[in-house]
Image 1: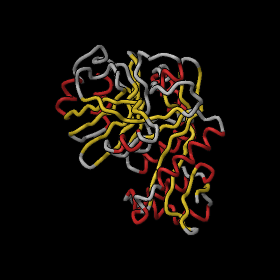
Image 2: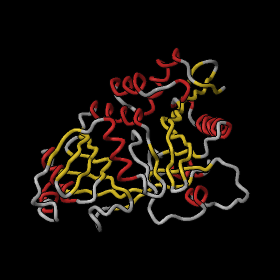
Image 3: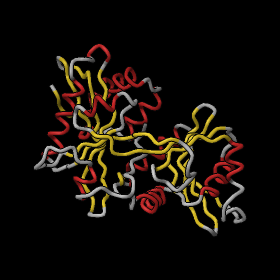
Image 4: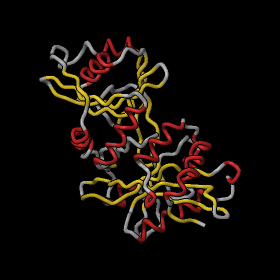
Length: 305
C-alpha cells in the first residue's frame, strides 16, 4: 500500500534513510526537521509498517517559453530486506500518476550512481542534464589565479544571504536553455545543509565583475558543487583566499566558459516528461518543452547529493 507520509511515521522513515544511505543522525534529523514535508513524501507500507519512501520536492524548469511545474524525486529508498520486490518502481509509478493529476509535467532525479541511469531509463527517465567535473591542485589554482583581466583588481569575499543566493542563480543560470529553479525556501535549506557540513557559500567581487561558489569540505578536498562566474581568475582567487586545502573539485555547467579544455563531462540528472504526447519517439525534454533542441546545455544542480 502506498500513501502520503504522516508525522507519526518520521522515526520509521529516519531508520529507512539511515539504513539505505548511511548518513549520520545529525544530518538525517536536519532533513526531517527542516526540509521534510509529509505532503511531499510517499511511503510504501507493508502490513502497516513503512518499508520504502520517496520525496517529491517542488521545483520549476525555466525555458525561453516560460516555466514548467516540476518535481525533483529525492530519497528513493527501500529497506534492504524488502528490496527486489518492485517497491521503488511502484512508488515512482504512483508519483507519476499524482503529478499528472496535478498538472506537473516533468519529474527530475539524480541517480546515486552511474549504473542506476539504466534502471531509471526503463521507467521513462532519459539523461537530460550533464555537468563537467574539473579537478585542480592548489598549485594549479595558484597558476590560474595569476592570469586574466581580473588579476590586479582588489577582491571582496563575503557570505551569501538567502535573497542574494536566489538572485545570483537567476543571473548566471536562468538563460541556460533548461534550468531547474529552486525557490528561496529550498535554497535556504541548501544553505543550512551546507553550514551543517562546514561548507561555505561565498560571493566574490571586483571592479571587473562578480560571482559565487558553493563549497563543501570533504576529507582533504574542497568540493565546489556550484560555481556562477564569468572569470576563472576571480574563482581561483576566491578559493585560495577562503580555503587552505590542496585539492579542489569543481562541478560546472556542461558548457561553462570556465576552465575550458579541462575536466570531464558526465551525465548528472535524468528527467521524464509526463504530459500527453501524440508520438512514441524518444524526444528530448527540450524538444518536448520548447519544440526544438537548444544550443545551451540544460542545467540542474544543488540537488542535495
